[in-house]
Length: 335
Image (cartoon, rainbow, N blue to C red; front, side):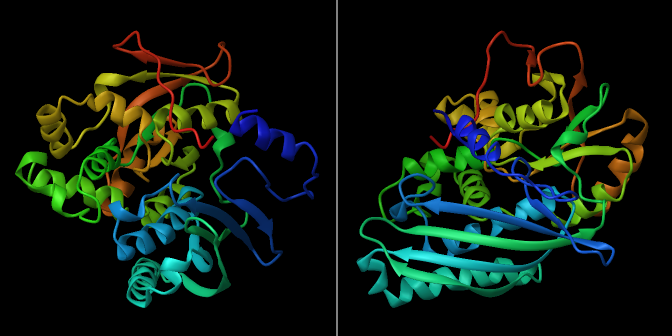
């Protein structure tokens, strides 16, 4: 059984109260009755699956643990409010006070940036690797959260920033010497370009301001963050909305750093952009008429609106046509 088949089997066994949004979006939505709704998201990061301790610093791991969850709140157009952090620690880390302090400092610094207060959690020992479990609560005006299921036929498919940078940063990290994750940004790996890409992987910044701005525009119909790659994440929107899409591969936005390092190592930027994930940019669909308003709103937030494709009906929901290549692409799978 695959990951999404397993999730579907769980969803079918539980009912969702009227007015609630459950499994299948970036956040659950709980109505409050005071003009607001509560957003809830939870992510788990497991050593050996989501990170390698000898390839990321304690500070960066703490930062990223908070960031990937706050990004889910941003993807719904919400404001992060509070978090809960649980850790299952192997014995080597329990005894490593400086490592734990740096982890918490990174978690605090990113959380504080978005006024997301740590209110609790749990700690226990682990017989094997480190496991990090984070829950984040957010809020949004009632009925204003942007879901995956709202895309319409003819919508433009857009992203808020460059694609593939994080995946390239990870490739650099995996090629570095153990316990020296920052050292691999040397000349052989592209110098400052390599350091930039590693930074994009280790310290992503959730697009909270951009998500809030987009949620206030009626022509923005669906949205999510890019965690598993466009090839996976766009399919989530399309299946939830009953649509297909054409993606113009020539329109995908690449940073100059990604292009430089890809050329140096003979990597395929297209593959990185569509499949590697963890860019934590926003992926959203909009009516063509709202493009000008969206561009202006994102400009104020320091982001861009890159049009990469268009939604259409008439084909199997979730189908993607990749214009400019005869290849097919699949994003990250958790199992």
